[in-house]
Structures are given as C-alpha cells and as structure tokens.
Length: 598
Image (tube, rainbow, N blue to C red):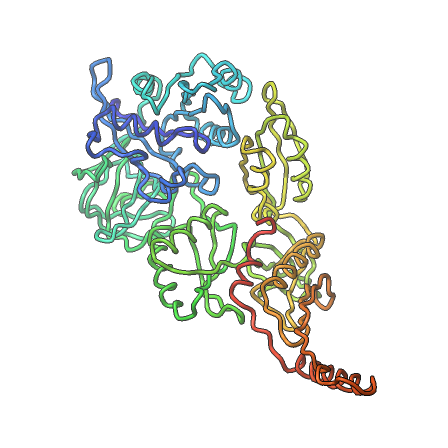
C-alpha cells in the first residue's frame, strides 16, 4: 500500500486538465504513440468538440520514481462543470491528494476556488500547479500572488508546467510520489468501498468504479449496497488501464472496478458504500446523498409517430446516465412526451444533443423550469416542477422558489455591467472582494429560475468572455409566484404556460405574444394573442385579418350600397371568429421556447 498514490486533477474549465492527464499517461508509458489521441480519457464526441469532461474516468499509471521504487498512481478524473459537483466531491473523497491546475494567463477563476474548497473539505494534500507557462501572455508573478492571497496556499510549494509542450511533467510525477500520502486501511477488515462512478457496458451490464478503503473484494464474493440493501455476486474485479485489466482481487487502497451483473446504472448510486453480505462493515462511508434534479423540461417528438422511438431512446440513454430522470407527460398542443429532470443547464444541453445525435431524433424541448414549493392553506406542502400541476391560487398560503449563491470572478472594469445584470435577475446580499490589482470577486444570492434562462450567456457577453461563474444551491425562499397562461383566440395553449415571479409576468408574456405574432399565419379574421394571470390579461398582440375587397363590384350608386356590403362582411367575420380555430405551427413553439435574448 505504501507504493500506491490516489490523486485527482482539479481546475477551472479550459485550464488544461485533460491535456495534463494526456501527458501523464504518455510519460508513464500506458499508451504508445500509435494509439494516442488528444483528450484520451474523454470518450464522447461531445467532450472532444466542447473541450469539457462530462463522464469522469479513472486510470492506473505505473511509475518508476527517482528513489528506485515502482509506484501505482491512480488518477481519478473529474467532470469539469458545476452541474456535476456531487460526482466531483465523490471522486475527491476517493483520493489523498489533488493537483490544483491554474492557467498562467487567466489566473484563479471561480471554479478554481469552488474545487479548492471541495478538496479542503476532504483534507486532501493540495499541490498548486501553474500551467501554460509557454504562453506569451503568461503572468506567473500575479498568479503566485493570487495563490497566496486568494487560495491561501503557500506559493513556494507551486510547480510550473506546460502540459501542451510537455515541460515540467516529470517534476509533477515526483511531487505526486513524495508529497501525496499513501492510502490508509487494512485489507483484513470488513469491506468498505466507495462508489465514485459507474458506466454501462452492453455486454457485461454496469461497471462499478470504486475506491476500496477497508478489506478485500474478489471474484465470487456476495457484495451488498448499503443504501438499498441490494446484493450481487461478483463476476470480475480489476484495475483501469486504458482498457479494463482483470485481477484476482482488489484490496484496501486500490482504485478499480467491479462487475457483478447489475442490470442498469440507476441501480448503482454514486457515493454509496459496498460491503460484503457475509461480513458487513458497521457504518457506511460518509457523504452519500440522493442526486436531485434542479432543472426540469418536457421533451416531445416533432412528429407524433416518433413517440415510441423517443421512449426507447430515453430508456437506452438512462442506462448510461443515472442522474437523468423522466416520466410520461402530455400536452394538448404538442401531444405525448416526457417530463425530464436535469442537474443543470449544461446537463440539459448534453442530453438534448446526445438524443439528437446518437439516436437520430428530432425533438422539441419546453421552457426549462425549476421545482417550486407551495404550502397550501390546509398545511399540505406541494412540490411543482410542471406548470400544469400549479395549484388553485385561492388555496396557496406560501409560494417558495430555490435560491443559489452565485460566485463570479471578473476584471474590475466589468463590475458595473455585471452588478446591473445581477440586479435585473433579482440578486440580493451582494459581496465584493478585490483579489488583486484589477480583479474582483463578486457573490450574489439569486433565484435559480432567473439564472437558467439566459444569465450565463449574458454574463459572458458583458464581461467579453473574461468572467467566470460558479454557483451552489442554498435554500427555498418565499416569493410572489404566479402562473402565466398564453391564450390564442381565447384558447389556452398549455405547452406555453410558465410559473414566474409576478414582476416578470408582463415581460415574459409580451415576449411570447410578440414571437407568436411573427410565427402564426394570418387568417380571414383577427387573432388575439394574450398573456393572462388567471382572468387578468397582462399582455396582448393582435394578428390583423386578411381583407377581401367586397366593394370592388360597386362602381357607382349610393354610398349605402357599399356600407351594406361592408356590414355583411363584418357579420361574416364575427361568425368566422366564433367558430374558426387557429392551428399553431411547430415553428411558433420553437420560437417561444427560446430564451428571451436569443
């Protein structure tokens, strides 16, 4: 066990985490040049295109150190986005140390801080590394100041490297061996292993990624999950190289995989503890919690004939993504579909893209919403994530919405624009710190519903891409919530209903009415498009009617002849409006479902 080191790499998005992992894999000889490709641990096309890690991986790196000993370095990769922060925390709980990567040109960013705090919570050894030192814009001195003042770490312990060019990689490997402590534990104790990830293999079922803290697990053992008591027989255990490497057993201190005939990834819960049924451990490992979705949206097929294909595709997708949840939903306008829960907007974006790309589907996504909490007058507490389940307003005693604490790091010159944006989004309790010359850290408490629309895009725009943003959910707070309905020719369109704060009701309604006016074709009668809160109309736009020139054949005579024809036309239009129905084209839904600033 003294020759094992378990570590992770944490960084803000695009600070070179995957590139450093590539260099470590190359230098330790796990992958030869012929089979090598950039971002080798990122398996999905979307990860390569966007340059982000969505599904974390683990790999064991054999290393012959300068002290003459052979070590096994277990790199437990982490997803890079705030939506997956629970998975990051479980990966860090499986390590004894982390490499904290900081871009020499950009310095400390919002997620650098967030990840540092996660590492400190788990009492990990932190090695700060300044990456991209070969860039012409690299400012190492100011980054060292930020390591001292912002992160509170000793700048003398830092290492410098350029993962792209390959400078300083040997020093990092030596630092992992000398500065990160070996794992603790006893292979003779009852088994306690932490699940930090899982993925689905179409031939073997679910592959469980785990870190063994105590005891030993081998082929043929009966294991038990402590959260739900489910038991399975172990078929295979082993370590992760670039491919799975079978072993007879894995013991305390090891990071590896277990195959035990688990049918779906949903049966395996990240953060759960595995023990042996015959000799269970007394207490589960700390930190386990149920993953709860925070953003909700409905998915409908564009052609109703594709409903079964969509249902089958969601079943297959769910095998690979345990945090994704869905249930059947239907809409009078859009037909049969599914109400889905996501960890955040990036997660929603990825699910949509993977469904379209991997399963060749054409889908419509409804307006994203959050889960609201209503306390009724009889004391019942109701959670509502779908506007169709909004309770009767006369029964509601208190309406509450989830709040987040947003942490932003940005150049000082953009402070005014960002503060204005946060105030627009009902931000409160602001806190401002100057982290260094010309750089500021700003935090606000804001409703999650305001952030999921277009906050991130607008934040990036006003800071010209230099700002970084991170958030965590804090609690539910009382809010003046109303249900906004969209009426077309007096008929309610249920797919466009939204739960919003009363102050936002008019602006959201106006935006929807304006877009529908542009998309719905004109008829022979006037069409009123209205936004309403209950019976109160708060916004309206009107599509004017086509006009048929019924007086064309009157080429002379008294004016009353023309008037008579016009009155007759007016009566006909009135009757047509009463019995006429307006069909809303698919493009109109797509236009309204886009965020306000698209």
